[in-house]
Length: 91
Image (cartoon, rainbow, N blue to C red; front, side):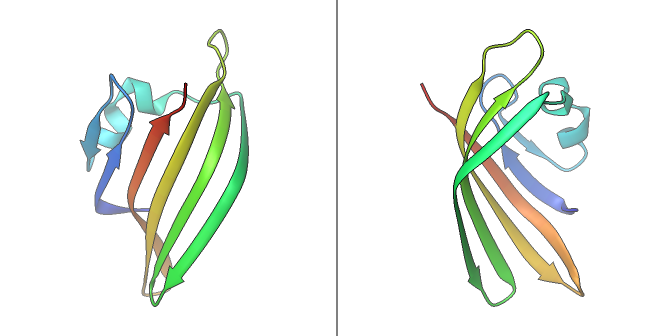
C-alpha cells in the first residue's frame, strides 16, 4: 500500500509523479511479464524501512529493462505505507 502523499520517480517519459497521478500514468500502469530482483538490501530504522535492489524486468515486445530501485516504507498503525519509489535505468 502507498501513502496518499507518495512521490515516485520514474525514467522518462513518466518522470516525477505524486498521488493519483501514479495510477493514471500509462507508462507506470503497464504490467511486466517477468521481474527478477537481485542485489537486495534492507535497512530498518525505527518505523522506516529502506529497500534497495537491482531489477531485470520484461514487457511483451520491449527489450529487457535493467534498473536500480529504492523504495522507502513507513510502518503506520500496523500498515506498511510506501512513501517513495525511485528507478534508475542502467545502460
